[in-house]
Length: 363
Image 1: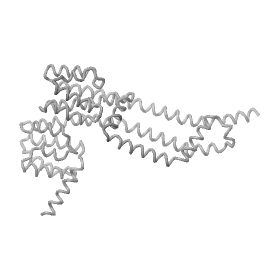
Image 2: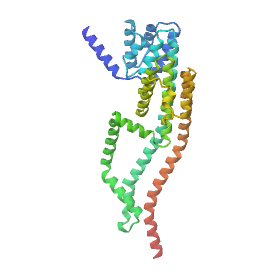
Image 3: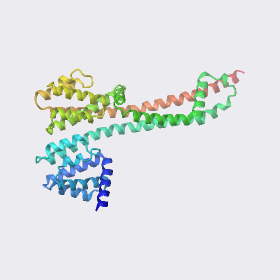
């Protein structure tokens, strides 16, 4: 028995270190809502889900849930065991409603809100994958041309000093890439690792996130995405009767941007001083005027949860439209960049050949 207990503990700790995907959580919440809506007990519902689950991590997690629920724990307390898989916001939303008879409703609402947030984030990632792939191919083509093609083409010219300045520059770049390509690859890898480690420190993360909010075009997209998450999560927490101060504390850690996190924590402090939300963010560039006015209306009508949810829907639509526009614009921009780069290399090679032809014809 002691060996079995030890194996179970090791298994639980390994599961705790892993996280389940958003898609799996959405399925879990929706199926659980359907079963509880059919008056099936929570323990029985999760046991049925455990029996049909194929994912080993999720199956192990559900198995723990069944045991803990039988010992008297609530669903929110079970979710709390796995912070890598379930956010603090999910725990609080479910905790606020599980003592009522509306657990199935809140599970469906939670799944819908998570799905919208996940959908808009996935669209952004998908929109960036194609341009990133094209840019990578462009750099690979230019690299191969500079290292393999250009040196062989320029071997026909014996007097390198008589070549045009553009051709000399091309030769210098080609020689540099040929001689130090391995060092450059190592430097790129080290730079990427450095950025990942650097971002984990609070101060540097703040500087990085602040820089991301200043990149032309992308800052607008990034801001709207953050505001959508902020509005949607805050609406869900308030409608679940989570205290406004604690709701802002949860939202601050969830928006994914250090600049906004610190600003939201300042809003929380203002609320504790009985300052209204709209007064705290008024004239702040991080929060557009439209959002300030909508929050003001919501506070004055005591209907802030539904009002701010409309703000989230508005920003979701704006982000979706901008992603579609960027997809249409990035492709021709990349093609033009490739044409300019390859054309410049071709001109640098052809210019001395054309000069040589003019000299021969003149002679």
